[in-house]
Image (cartoon, rainbow, N blue to C red; front, side, top):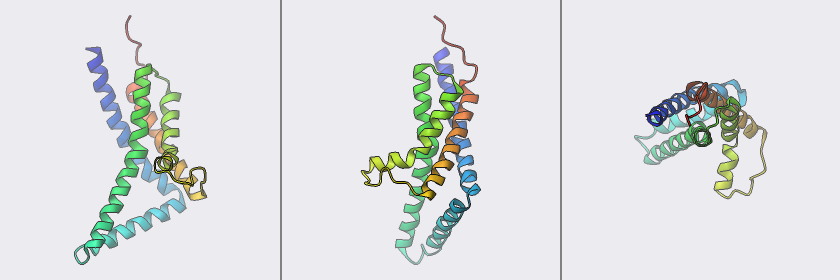
Length: 162
């Protein structure tokens, strides 16, 4: 019964933490002027592509590809590090806020470099100033998600009975 209750708590905490990350990411991006300009450019392109979708099917495909990219990025930054850190934390019975906040933040910030390695990019070690700003926004997002998860599921959890 404790296992089922714990599984429900973890699933609820993951859902709440992903929701918090999806709220924090746009705020973190909006806090930086360069990232804010880039996001407005993305939004402008998307609106233009959707407006031309009736006239040009290629524009509709471009809009769909952009939305797929944004959705994939959000999942990679907001959900994947959180799920991995939560799974490791649950398996190892780690309840420390340092683990949940820190590891989720580092995992989210490392997402661009992990993606480069996955796709075999030759620019694996290179990073420009805008990429580092984006990594900082991802770090803040991961820290917020990890903190919300820890507050919801990890804080004050009793060790299992022997």
